[in-house]
Amino acid sequence: MKIEIDIRDYIPPTIALEAVKQVVAEGKMSKGEKAKMYYCWATTFETSAGSIIVLTRKYRKNNCFKVCRL
Image (tube, rainbow, N blue to C red; front, side):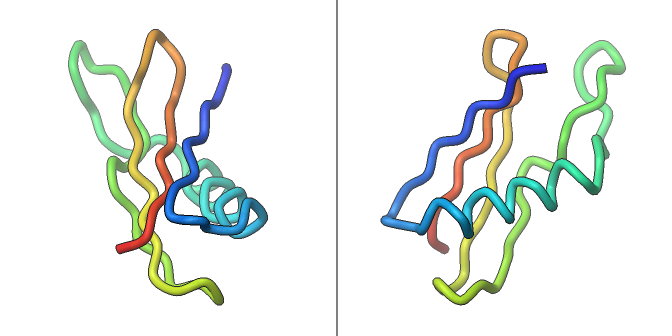
């Protein structure tokens, strides 16, 4: 499995990676099209860099994570 991460709003990469790691560790949660399992599409975190959100979607068979400020 390939993972793509789009980090926005000058969030430090270490904080973004830790948030994505937590989302992945919690596992695939919601059933989607054709009974495939997907990660939760939006997860929020309180970090030392402030409030951030991790958004997920499927893109060309890969999991994409977008990390930005709330």
